[in-house]
Length: 393
Image (cartoon, rainbow, N blue to C red):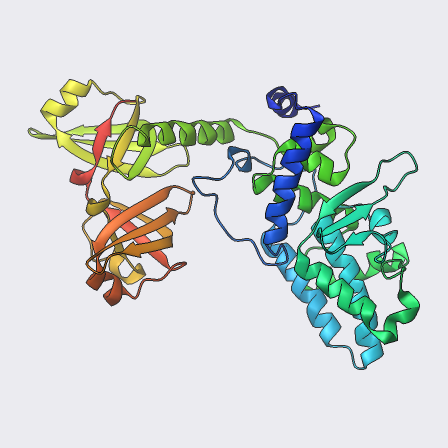
């Protein structure tokens, strides 16, 4: 076991069965409300579980969100390209097997043993897996209702009557071959796609979504949390990012400023009247502040000191890409609009930088209209160095 995995195990609390079951139900309910077949391109938000900030060991073969999306679309295109209804039905059956593998994180043998008539509970949005070995305990995994509805429609088709109770019981070799074929069609490297890789991918996806480690253990049917811990490793950089997020959050709770950057002083440049301070955050962002020499002396700052940079929302400007070259602001960061809230005169633009840092700008309603801002739009957040307040944590 690696040192990182040992650290994870030390952090896992000793949860009783009732607590684990409650966490499992909460996580499952959240997954059932969200269609997991959609591509995941969201960046970690301020409310995301800090466990999402981890590194997957190189020996864990898995697919990222974009690769999973490409593979899913390849299966759909392959099904739709069938020349006859019988061929399309056969391909749809294979697509359902793939989707169950992709969403459940179950082993291939467990998926192929599912009886859609007795193991699927559509009311509870669950699929029961008996375990691939006789000594394994059965478990229930919550899946999106949309997928279970697809299974129900396929099984209810009179032409598929002969498959009832055995819809998922395909030959393992056939399933593997089709996975490899669709991986090639999706442009994925040879050997990247397998039932095991899909299981690993689901585990990583759940952990990055903030599902607690013991809950992922239950979902995958691991006998010990030690087995689940192999999916995440925390480097020094990961640890710094997690701690900086926590410290930044604590700092934001003590100030009215909506925008907070936590980092260390990376450079200091003085003039007869002012001092320019550059701080670098744990994620590599550089924020520049200009303060008076008297303020700098009062703070007693020097390079490598930890500091917090605060920027009030009215001091933050928002622009599309074309506006970036037309501003003299020293601080300019790309991000995405996550929310828009206004009263007809002033509008609060909430966003997120590429590293997950939340941003808030207060601009006029007329500016929102002229920029044609909408949720999900890529934008630049920028503010002048004189607008940055330096605070010592």
